[in-house]
Image (cartoon, rainbow, N blue to C red; front, side, top):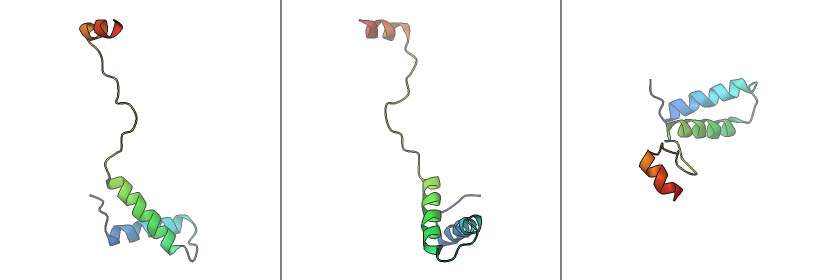
Length: 67
């Protein structure tokens, strides 16, 4: 089942967060924002930073790099 960024899914995740934190009062807005951020991150493609992974070099490429 796909997770979407809609009010129902955000509310369900916020409720889970609220329960996991012992049902504190007055934290509903923070739980909502946290749930929204978590679901948004889950739906976003990963961000790749830094250098790309190294590829295996063939013999010809290794020789040209060594010069």
